[in-house]
Length: 121
Image 1: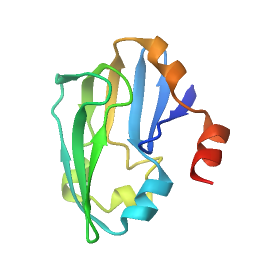
Image 2 (image 1 turned 90 degrees about the horizontal axis):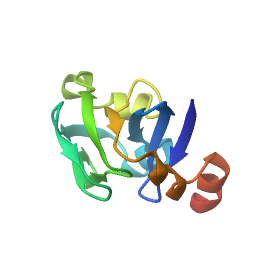
Image 3 (image 1 turned 135 degrees about the vertical axis):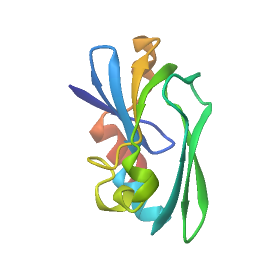
Image 4 (image 1 turned 45 degrees about the horizontal axis):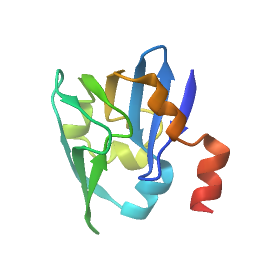
């Protein structure tokens, strides 16, 4: 599995044509205490750069943008009852979606971990 990062602070861990998507630890830290997560439903399709959710914290609301084209296979329903999981484990149990990738070549537009660290540096 390979992990990619977007300039909008999302991460994707890819296994074949399926990926797990979430916000980065950096994004969670910048948002502060997360109190609400608005998610799309399983079966929803989306295009790269389309809004696919909203994360609200005590500081602000932040849109989640799709880093690639795809279809939501599963939304992390645990976040509805425990949105703070995004703060506790943003790149682990706090994932947002499992998605089926429509065009794996779009992954070439994303950063690896070193590139992301340099980007937020």
